[in-house]
Amino acid sequence: MENGEIPENANEHCPGPQSDSAGKSDACEGCPNQQICATAPKGPDPDVVAIAERMATVKHKILVLSGKGGVGKSTFSAQLAFALAAMDFQVGLLDIDICGPSIPKMLGLEGQEIHQSNLGWSPVYVESNLGVMSIGFMLPEPDDAVIWRGPRKNALIKQFLRDVYWGELDFLVVDAPPGTSDEHISIVQCLDAGSIDGAIIVTTPQQVSLIDVRKEVSFCKKVGVQVLGIVENMSGLCQPVMDFKFLRMTEAGEQIDVTEWAREHLKERAPEFLSIIACTEVFDSSRGGAEKMCREMGVPFLGKVPLDPQLCKAAEEGRSCFVDQKCGVSAPALKKVIDKMMENQGLSRMLVDNNA
Ligand SMILES: Nc1ncnc2c1ncn2[C@@H]1O[C@H](COP(=O)(O)OP(=O)(O)OP(=O)(O)O)[C@@H](O)[C@H]1O
Image (cartoon, rainbow, N blue to C red):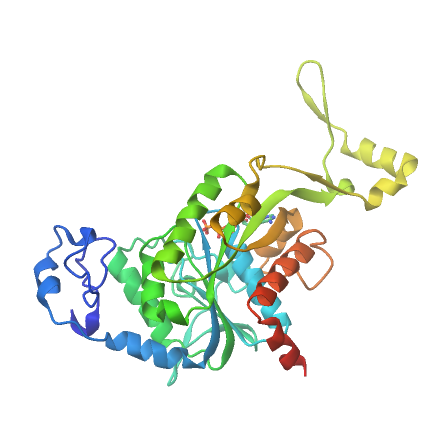
């Protein structure tokens, strides 16, 4: 238990041997270290001191959270990092989704490796002002499963925060796994909740996802992290009419692909349809979706981002959705969300200073 490290054989959700509840919390029941933790003298964790020194060059730290998996949290983190970098900020993107790191792929950095210098681990750079760190860069095979218990995850997160040399950063965006588990407790403890600007929570509009968002908001309140706002992702499907596939149902229930016929028909008879974007609701939001929940919980609503096949493609190919006109429906929506967050936090002023 040197340096306040969580021992390998500790229970899941170990609060850490330096914590006030060490040896006394519910998670400590039956742990072989319970007795030592409960009686050992407490002092400042030297790692946390080293992390604070390392993080002194980072102006703003933003966590990206979600209650459920698959709601678009990593996609949002990646595009937020691209957007901030495009505004000429110096940006770091840290992936602490240790068991399912998708950030290397979403930034187009698959197969890259981390290098070490005398200053520490070097992030992998997309551009000179956008560096990325992820366990995904350390796996010998991309298909390797990472099956780690809490203490090991905690140790890696500490190492990421203490040993990565980011240099001067305007923003560090942290992409967390879904839920409120070991990684979340670790990042908040290591960074010190008070030094984190806040958390953006990503959800889809349906109730099953929103229920978990409430837990996420409650986690943030408990640990003292401000909720910067909630983003409703996959909020309806929107795409140009001409990108749809058209099917005709026969009486026997068979589906016949009539896409070619329908497109030609539209071009000839109703060319104005070529510029129409069709939207439909995919997930049930009849109970008001994230916006209503934000009003109830007293947290900011940042906006809606529609399901856009082009955004999915950009994420698959590790591209920014902001550089060309391909993500015509999702990119402006994402930009609005990011602008609103910056505005709410008074960060837009940085942009003015940056461009001065
Ligand atoms: N608005 C969107 N339109 C289209 N596809 C999207 C959108 N948001 C996310 N996706 C796609 O949905 C899939 C899941 O997204 P993503 O991996 O970002 O979710 P996640 O919440 O980070 O999941 P996990 O936490 O399980 O890693 C990805 O293929 C992503 O490209």
